[in-house]
Image (cartoon, rainbow, N blue to C red; front, side, top):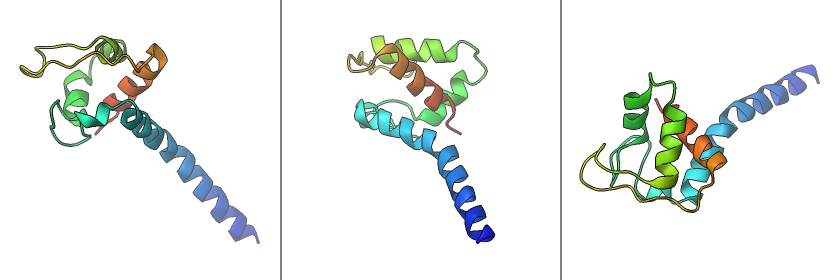
Length: 104
């Protein structure tokens, strides 16, 4: 009985730790980010791993990236501009930016 309870607690802890990553990828998918970006390969835009590597040491990166998510941008990653994402509010943009920066 005790080992069964322990096993359930371990599974619950693992799901809790992994859930934010899945939830943020789900948000990225729901907000159409994944149409142009992938976690580990360049599509239309850079991979999230490339973005995380570029901004990894920047303490203001979450705010910078959240702004780019909401307003769009150009020139940083090549000639193709990133359009503004009007579907994303500020809190969602910060959640997405933090998730992108966690890509390893």
